[in-house]
Image (cartoon, rainbow, N blue to C red; front, side):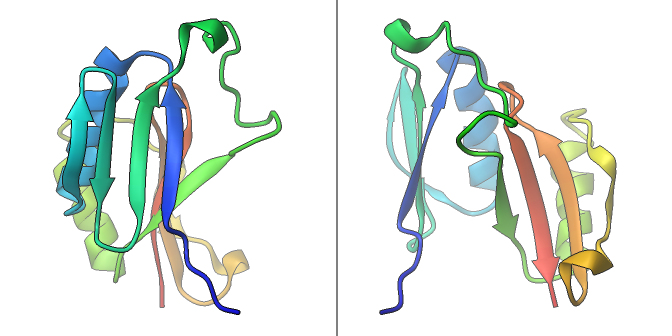
Length: 133
């Protein structure tokens, strides 16, 4: 039985901060907005949907840390090293979003020509834009 990822739901601590970040990111990566309110955004590329929703007040005291149980990072795949570099130069640098681990760079330990840039969202969820040839 073969499967694919259909959707991801991320809770964020402050919709006013995180929704503009994710709206810009997913719009840049050619996702379409399928639903939106002041508390959430839903985007789709026709294969995978992302739902970014403000955390319910009852759970806001539990801050995110990627070393805790749960999600550590999200990786979004592009087609080439050139596309990753374009993303860095057109999206991250103009928004002054710092990169992690001295990236973008090649990670031969991940197999093949794995090239990636790592950065964080406003809640410090680690995001990666990568390609593997």
